[in-house]
Image: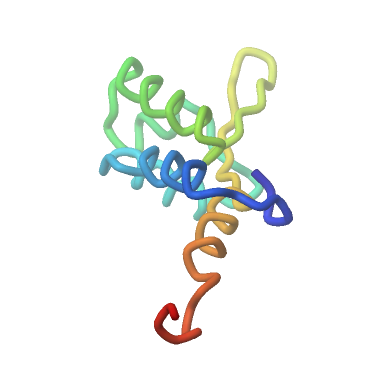
Length: 103
């Protein structure tokens, strides 16, 4: 989902649901801190003390929700936060900010 796309409530709910676990929030925050450099799967697991199978489960959910992207580099996979998705979700939630109560 890009910022220019018009997300609907269902897409936003899926995005937010994918962050509905503390490990996924920690993964996302770690990748946000890494910026465009991203982080290898093994490094994420080491830093957050997640087993490979648990990490793979969480990463898959986040990729499916387009919260992160993965790029294969040889035998390694670099993970990056997808800023467009999270920015789109925040923009959707804040679109009606301060417009007063509905009529």
